[in-house]
Image (cartoon, helix red, strand yellow):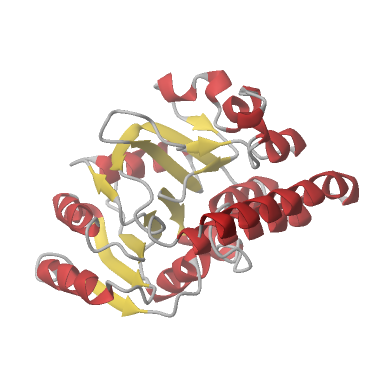
Amino acid sequence: MKRRAVSIIIVAYNSSNKIDKLLKSLILNCKYINEVIVIENNSPDRNATHRKCEKYSNKIKLTFVENENVGFGRSCNKGASLSKGDQILFLNPDTELKTSSIQILLNHMELTHADIIGGKTISYKGEIHGSVVRAPNIAVGLFEFTNLGKLFNIKKWHKYFYYEDRKMSLTDEDQLVDAVSGAYLLITRKAFQRLNGFDMNIYMYLEDVDLGIRANEMGMRVVYCPHSEIWHIGGASSNDVHKIHHKAWYDSRKYYFKKHFGVLTNAILQPIFVTEEFVFKFINRIRE
């Protein structure tokens, strides 16, 4: 099996205290890496992140790009446009690769003829994060994308969305899926160009789901590979920006359903989304 040149794209925001572990782990996988591009989205700790990157720049080909905070998807697209590899691997800055993570993912991309492939993301406590998801439907929008599922203790659609009803976290076989997590997503350059990258109208959240759905609609193969594992802390870029975090989520869920669903579904969901958004804004103002 021939060696493939992979470009790593990392979008960083308030990530200086997490990115060090990722950069160290990339060095262990450097045999399979053509380049690393870090897009720094004008965060308060950008200088600290820059210093962390400089520390490893003599061990791996690393480019640090200062960028306006234009959102995750746009920044990923910018990183991809600067890259040269045949495959593009998007990684969250709060992840850490195992020694053979990239090798396994590349091998299984070739074995499964995947256009997009994602691996298993695990917390340091051993919990499996949302590595793979189904295409959202109206019930997912109602009970998983709002707090109604928690309010009424309805877990069915959470399990459906994350493939937990198929016990995907326990499988040891590659699976064709609707979408994989953008925290650990490998895509061929050809597929990324056909898809025109991530939807630039999505600031943050659901851009990976949208990418997978569009890929499936175009007849591409989206694969989940449980053999390739990484550690994922979660929340490194949004813990300290709650208002941006919530606004991005509110905007993304509204946009996603407007884009992918018809008038009837949106007539049901959009008022619920807007009402919940208003309620939480009101609660936050009281707390402030």
